[in-house]
Amino acid sequence: MIKLAVLVSGRGTNLAAILEAAREGRLGVRPVLVLSDRPDARALSVAQTYGVRTAARDVAGPGGRRAFFAWAERELVESGAELIALAGFMRLLPAGMVQRFRWRILNIHPSLLPAFPGLDAPRQAVEHGVRISGCTVHFVDEGMDTGPIVLQAAVPVLPDDTPGTLAARIRKEEHRLYPEAIRLFAAGRLRIEGRRVRILPGQKDI
Amino acid sequence: MIKLAVLVSGRGTNLAAILEAAREGRLGVRPVLVLSDRPDARALSVAQTYGVRTAARDVAGPGGRRAFFAWAERELVESGAELIALAGFMRLLPAGMVQRFRWRILNIHPSLLPAFPGLDAPRQAVEHGVRISGCTVHFVDEGMDTGPIVLQAAVPVLPDDTPGTLAARIRKEEHRLYPEAIRLFAAGRLRIEGRRVRILPGQKDI
Image (cartoon, rainbow over all chains, first blue to last red; front, top):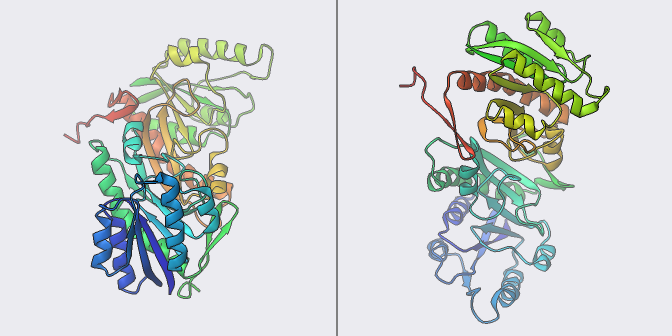
């Protein structure tokens, strides 16, 4: 079992999928901390439901972004987290934090990267007129949604989709894909080679 | 039946898929011209097999690119082509030609645009480490692979893929997708709305 911390800002639907899978013993991780940059994030009550320790600090409070991330980094180090999963966490991490936890931070993004990085990816996809979109779990590097890709899943974009209906269809895939990526990481099966991620065979696969 | 011209540079595998489907009467088009910027393109003999008129001129010959496209534009106008399909044609069209045949030029590209525009898209996809790629049929505008998207198809990128094995998997989808897009165009079922393409219902769909 490796120790998992999850960073959140919002509703916590990916968090719930991860914590549920972890509770069922499917991931090989023990969630030790859920950390939020918004004290009113609904994800915090999801964490409490699963009995996971929470920590929250308003990034808009005294000291701003800099103080928030200094605090967050201390919390993460003290938690002993070996893997950090960003789950709807809406801020770019400082380069120092990325370097400190190099290749131990995962993110999920609602597009088939490298298409549509950044904010509001389902809206970008609908406005661009693509027929296929999806989601991507990737390691976090210093860029915006640019790190090595672990897993992707595709979904169709339907003629009458709004950003909201497309986002909902993508989210369903996210809830399956993110726990799977965490499971692979925890099993030591992800090897980064340049900007590609090799998935090593599992015991059942040999 | 609308008149179709196809621009080629290479082997003509997409051309063959289009001409075969047209011969079977599935597309609602009559191929009137296959035009190449390389007199030795194998696609020219594919066209001859199907009894379609060919025209070729070396873009590296006297007058270069400018003379080539002036000649090509004359040929296209004289052919009466109502739709122009780029099938492995390796050059960006001059803006004047795009404007003259506005929204009557289609291209197929071996990636899920907007990811990996430009040359050697399967290699770009493999080197970027994506798990899913595919192909895109789009209208041609003045940019490089930037025009409104008609159809897309996804394929998996497998762990041991080379650019060649991925390109072959994508090409299989291209041979299905491109005739389908041409069929929709010929049936008057594609309506461009901003940068999105709406596919109008067909008689069978109503």
